[in-house]
Length: 394
Image (cartoon, rainbow, N blue to C red; front, side, top):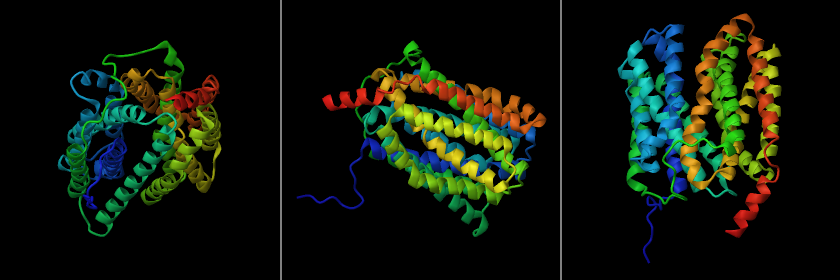
């Protein structure tokens, strides 16, 4: 009988997604952690330059619908690997171009890889996972993502604090490691069978209207968190880089243990109840941001806010249950574009509102969460039972 050596393994769709998630989390966490300091210290960025960079970074997300055209010539799995290569290379070369336009260029390259991968990753996950296990497995992937990001933060801290490295070598290390894992992924994982042939054209169906609306409000709400929640911590409460980094790390530690449990919980209670809990909690969090006067309480709100991101799994599994099998890939790109519509408008427009009254920004976030809460009530409470019955017949 042939014995399998310890370094050998049987590649599966789950192992593909785990390794791909590690590459994505490692590369993006490394890029994010060093961005602000690199931009100021090496590229002499001003606030206007940073605003332009963030807008450029979001453009590939807005154009994610174009993924369906690339799928005319590439299989999704191959497209995912190429996207990870672009992401890793973009991060690896960032330190080599310490100028304003150099950082713009490497950011766009990195962002193309990141947003195309996120689009394909969602599509592959929903195709490969069975409906009754999708929420739990997506929670497990979130846990893997948090572990990879946490390790990356630790490596960066060691690199700058202990080994006194510079940006060039740290970006090369993180991007190069991501590229090596991606190449390993490409050579060890054969093409897996698609659950159903995917449509290769843009799809907007009336039957998905509720999903589109929920995705739009989710993207708008996420922008308020990404752009203004952290800025509140720094501007109003004086958190320094070390303290903000500590909050990031705490968020990831919590997600490592909590995300799989949240996924299992969503699988048990169904999407409507899970989204109702999420949106009610987010209303409270955003109102809390608007009125908070304690730095410690603000940190608690920030951590709770991040936990609610894990509950967004329910939105993905909701789509999985209502979608026609052949629509998943095309709709993943369209929904990613819808999610990023707000990214074009909110940062700049609400930056002006911020100068007038910070609390109004977060009250608007609470209003967006309230809209999502109302919309979520139109999700059939019997959705889980119907799909459980379908699964039992298979």
